[in-house]
Amino acid sequence: MTRRKALQILLVVSVWAAFKRRGFAAQFSSIKDIEALQKNWKALLADGIKVPLPSESLKVSKDEWRKRLDPMQFAILREEGTERPSSSPLNNEKRPGVFACVGCNLPLFTSEMKYESGTGWPSFFTTIPGVFGTSTDYKLILPRTEYHCIRCGGHHGHIFDDGPPPTGKRWCNNGVALKFIPKHGQA
Ligand SMILES: [Zn+2]
Image (cartoon, rainbow, N blue to C red):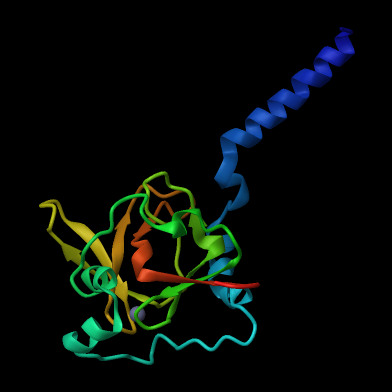
């Protein structure tokens, strides 16, 4: 191997290693980028799909929710349950589109806000603005931040501080509480 060839290989390997190290951070380097994702979320909504606004509050009795939702959806959305890790097909959903509340169709996240956290639950580093309310729960003794759909009040998951930069947040969502609306093609 010539010296020149060896230097070329070294250069390629070090660029590749630097890229790999930066990973996610290279993709989203600033909060401004995150704000752009939030502002432009409708670009991921399928053409001709009508969705409600966060302000269009949906109040339904517990008995009515029991009729509208299947038992698993009811347990999570209305009784703050948690699905088994790695049980949701949405863990592997990578198509462009929007994740909406299964209770009321309010869009909550886009595919561009999702990342692989390795936890077994669909995970997002930010959300569509203004779609969640939060509260503190003590179910596991240590306080956790619970979040719920602002429109129907349905529980979705918890927020943790181990997400990727620049937000550092992980919105850990039950897949059962979400429905995916692909930008193109069939759900
Ligand atoms: Zn909802």
